[in-house]
Picture 1 (cartoon, rainbow, N blue to C red):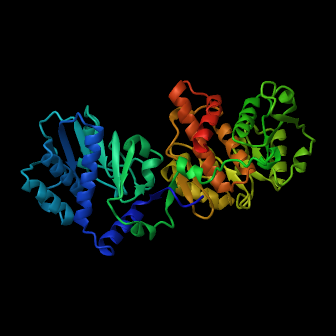
Picture 2 (picture 1 turned 45 degrees about the vertical axis):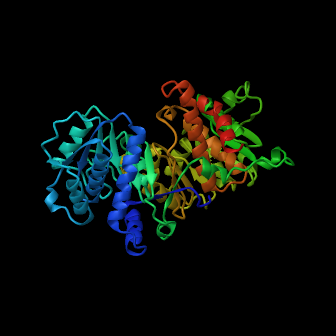
Length: 501
């Protein structure tokens, strides 16, 4: 995938960009703090125009300094503004101390926690902890966060919701549940995966006028935030002089007796995502009826002594795992597919069988995509689900390295990674997609994109993004609670049309 698009950074990478801007490009640190405060005030006035009484909760570092700037600018704009500090303002240093002094200079006052201002505020700003947190929140800060979360008014987080790890998106003991966030300098990857989206809310970004050259020095290891613009660099309009053979052949292998729906969903999603041909290789028990109302699907009945898979050419793509099961028939198909030279997408029961292989390293030789949810990923790496969720990006990269494949770690803020160290996070999608068959649809989409010539990593990124887009379109019309996997397929045409117009 081309490097265009929004970059994602760790907290340390953002600190380095900030350092470069200040010490190499000569932008004063306090000037950046003032720009940050101005960006927050502008965002608040745009999105919360009816809020007339603001409360700013300030911590002791530069995040607290941002809060003092917000308070000063708001007061100068005529907004009734109050500040509550978690620390003695006299102990502030550097730019934060200057921000406090400037707040006092305009007549501002500070209430010190645990005494809270006796006001009925209608907008609160979280400037407590910022991005540097690396341990569980406790003591007075925990008390303050719990108090904040109990207020009956919106909360806007400055840079990141306090208590959220900027790298992993995990809650560090407790966290502010913000309604929205304004972040600066670089987008922090933890805001878009794991707990990050639930606690940070919609995220606005401002680079504070820092020249791109400051970020460019640190972009090599940056991630990518997936969006429609990224997809348009990958998915091009079709040539008029083409035919079904131009768009590849997907062989979807799975569907043990009683699990025909999974392989059917996978195959139909592949058709709706542009594959020229799709063949379902499945159990004889239902092979004859699987395409009754979708005649565009071809179906092949595979019995226990059938070597049909060996004849699949290396230019085809195998989607292995939806409804595959764990029977003797399942294991036979799994091993025959693994012996084939075709590019593969492995999902569901295919991943569970893969996790039991004696040699778990470098099986795919840069010729496949794995699409685990956290429980499947834990089996592949031999760790707990909580281990996976504590560092979703790190674990996706570890999986990619171990299996020499591109990896899609599904979940809130799905992570795509490959063995070269690249990663991307998808901010789209919704909880309605947590339904049976949704992963089978994703497998079919990725397989179709591989069949059309995309690389494993690009197909994984594009597949994840369009799957999420279709899910969001479905949620808009049928709601999250009522959504089923077939709805995602039904909205794929609209999603593709939005990308290739």
